[in-house]
Amino acid sequence: MVWGVLEEMRIRSLGVIDDAVVELSPGFTAVTGETGAGKTMVVTSLGLLLGGRADPALVRIGAASAVVEGRISVPPGAPAAVRAEEAGAELDEGVLLVSRTVSAEGRSRAHLGGRSVPVGLLAELADELVAVHGQTDQQGLLKPARQRGALDRYAGEAVSVPLAAYGEAYRRLRAVTAELDEITTRARERAQEADLLRFGLEEVEAVAPLPGEDAELAAEAERLGHAEALASAAALAHAALAGSPEDPESVDATTLVAGAGRALEAVRSHDPALAALADRMGEISILLADVATELAGYADDLDADPLRLAAVEERRAALTQLIRKYGDGEGTAAVLAWAEESAARLGELDNDDDRIEELTVERDRLRDELSALAQRLTDARTEAADRFAAAVTAELASLAMPHARVSFSLAQTEDPEGVEVGGRRVAYGPSGADEVELLLAPHPGAPPRPIAKGASGGELSRVMLAVEVVFAGVDPVPTYLFDEVDAGVGGKAAVEIGRRLAKLARTAQVVVVTHLPQVAAFADRQLLVEKTNDGSVTRSGVTVLEGEERVRELSRMLAGQEDSETARAHAEELLAAARADG
Image (cartoon, rainbow, N blue to C red; front, top):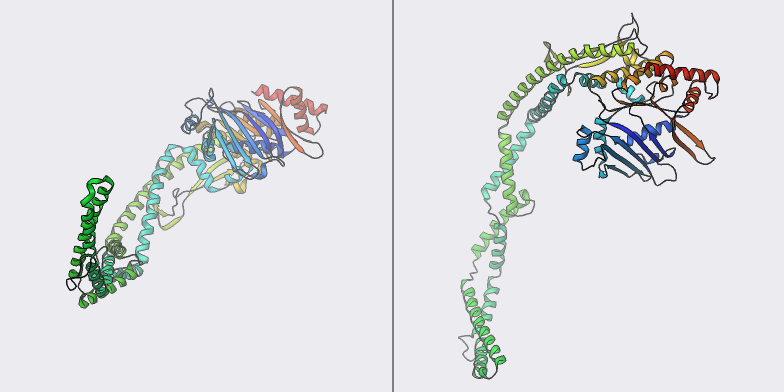
């Protein structure tokens, strides 16, 4: 069942394409043309819709931005539809609208279902919607890690479940091993650190600072250091307010204010305004009396004690030293915070032996767990490798490689520090202990060799196509895009590739950029990318070919001449054979 179809793309100001609409069929669409640039823009456009990297160099010269818009048919409930709706996108009668804009300055914007979204969301949907394959993907298939990934993907849950558990245990083991190595290899440094912390804590404990004590002592030292001046000023102020017993004739402020108050009280009944002033004068008289009393008490309590001042300064010196060493000059509160943190750290350092024992036990447990999981992965991969190789070999027989045989080599490298698999200690990594390599024997009698060494460019294209066809039966995606997957292939092999792509299109949408007429003839729809030049500007357009136009294009692809009778006859024969095969 096809659960996502790319119906249409509109491309504006992208590379050599000025403004083109690319209509795609639900089945097999072939994209052809005389030159590669326009065809490549079609692939590039789809890449942008799927969250690919935005390159400002793609914007057509003279344009402010390039825009690619796409219509994707996605039934409700499909994974892509669910993810899009979670992001706030809206489906229009089962159609998801996607757009990507790239400015000439390099800015990129993405919209999904009428909602602005991060470009990364388009990449997420791409995993559910489209499988893209091109020349770079063929080279990727040569890498052992990609080959192991392909085998794991084919194996399904038999590998994915233990692999997830293995990955979690592997990451934990790395963390435990790193901590254990850090403790054991830096034992001397940690001992020195513990000695320094212990010395500092003893200093702090000896002084025993209190929160805010430094500020309080500073205020007290200031007061004690100026006790005589403070006492003299208080006495003079008290005499000015309340008078001096030694000078009965002196005039003081309290007496003067009291007299003013009595004068106002005598006539306050005649004017409310003056009565208000009399009330305020009474308040002043009370306030002066209170201040005079407090000044007398302050002067009596002030004690110029040189011994106390010396003790305060000595205490301040001790605190200042602590603050400078352990408080970053921020006061006793910072010193106490350092002491709390250092005590906790010292506890960790003093418990190294216990921690080493704990970590060693956990490391051994994790290694045993990894050994069991690695063995499960090896067993599952071995079983899946036989099925996968047999399926790919069968597909190659349909791709004009009837005598080719594909197999997998699963091996491990012995390592005394590794995990135990199959009764041996072997090296291991984040994906297990298996070294997976895809082997190809192209004809009887030829020894299986790694495909990087034993496959030509055309053979590698067919192996990749066979792998994807096999995947289509176990882990399908709605749309497959092949960018010149038929490179290096011709003749009967090209016909078989076209036939196989047509078969794949029965259960999925297939888009192929091709230069081979044998492949294009099998397509349900053929698009022509044409380049025009008015002498100053080069443009490309996309046209749907039907009837006579398609025959002419296939003739050109066959012989380089649209009007060659021989080429036309061959083109018509190809189309008839493809229709009969379908």
